[in-house]
Each structure stands twice: as C-alpha cells, then as structure tokens.
Amino acid sequence: MSAAVAWDVAPAPVRVPVRPARPCLVSVPTGAEVAALSATPLRLTRAARLALTLTVVIAAVALAIALFAGGASATVIDHSTTVQSGQTLSEIAVRELPQLSMAEAVVQLQVANDLTGSNVHAGQTLLIPKVG
Image (tube, rainbow, N blue to C red):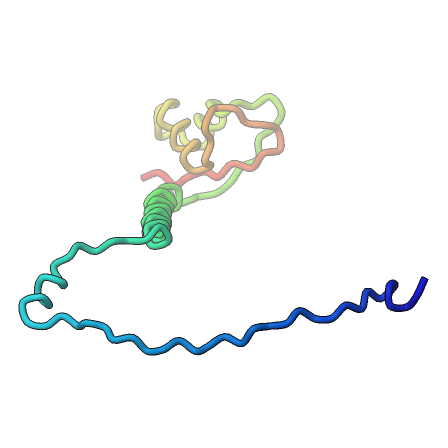
C-alpha cells in the first residue's frame, strides 16, 4: 500500500470566488403611506410566542408559590412533642390542647404539621401550635 492511498491525499476542491452583493435601491414610503404602514398589526414569531408563554407561566407559578407558602407559616408554635408508641393524633390533641374541642385540636395539629390525614408514627415529632 502506498503512502498516497493510506493518507488519502487528494487535491482540495477548487473554490469559486463570490462576488460581493451590489447595493440595491429601496423605495421608502413617505407621506400618507407612512401612517398606513405603521397601522399594520404586530405579528409575533413562534419564538416570541413561546417566550411570552413561558414568561406568563413562570409568573403564575411564582404567584401561586407566594400565595400558598404563607399558610403554615402564620401558625405560632408553642412547643413540640414526640409521638409515643400506640398514641393517636386525637389523644395528643386532647392532651396538648385541652382548651379546644377534639376536632378543632386535631385540625390545629394537622395545619401546624402539614399533615394530610390523622396518621402519626411512633418517634415522630409534632409541633404544638399556640392557641389563644
């Protein structure tokens, strides 16, 4: 095998020089044509519509986070307790918040601890809200 075949030495393709573009005359509107030209509606490209949509979605998500994040932070925490084996949320609510009815106390504990149900586990730390 020769070196020319192994290295694939082939002549470079010939490039044709490109002539520079000649300036063209452009007709510029004057008088009443200018007013008619500026009255045409704005047309958004696909990229502009996408950018506008993403901006609105991001603003809506930021607003939703700002509105819903403030709910649990408004609760003032008095102290915390650890759930013992066999305890239920209603037992803890009656013991820790005796000034409220059992249903109201359970709801207060659920809100303070971001609980979606009444299930608690042994060893779980519950925040007890300040009432009154």
